[in-house]
Amino acid sequence: MLKETALILAGHGSTKNADSSRFTRETAHRIRAREIFGEVRSAFWKEQPSYADAIQGLKTKKVVVVPWFLANGYFTTKILAREFAETAGVECRVTEPIGSRPEILGHFQKRTERLLSARNWKPNQVSLLVASHGTPLHAGSRMAAVDLAEQLAQDGYRSTRAVFLEEEPKIADWRVLIPEGPVVVLPHFLAGGLHGSEDVPELLGISGAGEGWYKTEKGEVGYGEPLGRPEEVEEMIIELAAAKA
Image (cartoon, rainbow, N blue to C red; front, side, top):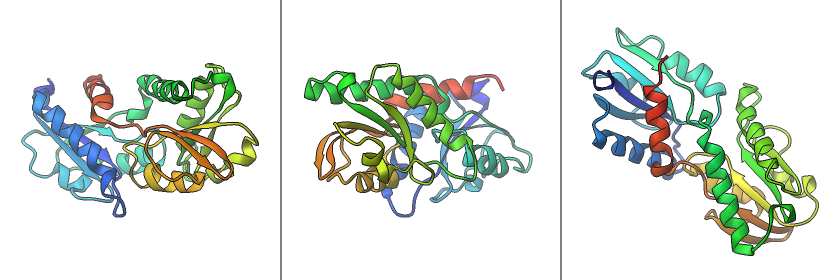
């Protein structure tokens, strides 16, 4: 019974960007108000409350943890599994991350449709990049972005590929990878935060982080809205939490 279960949204957070955890907290508040679960909390690796703090004082001994991450990589398979493994009598189940849900593709497609519509362009007139984090620590980190790029390629773009902050091919090399023409970049980050709102725009050479088209010295870039608005992810989280282990 979900009423006997506590839901914890486990995110990364940031000490450098206050917006990194905003959507996580807002989503937890929205789900809490629906009274589906016995308790709903958010917790973070880099902010308070910590993962350990979120377990303290629960009224229930049954917890489902939904990773506020887009890839089933290092944090979901190593860090979260470790942090919620030994919890002093509390039974914790860690689900697949938000990024595992099939709805993510549709959210990306809506962003590309808005950007193309603003210029009255068709997919075959632009190239598309999925800009993600990546890490050499875990191969699964890049696979979510690679899979999305492959699925988006079926929509008929001139070229489509995934690029990364910490792996090859690098986001900074976007114009080397796509020598000419307009480029749509979809940030594969939840809630923007440090990477989606600062790091990626800087590497692209664009002047803002809002969804829209930007002129750079290397050509025109259409930047998509980062994922993670509460109304986008709320139902996905509930379905992940409600699914059988």
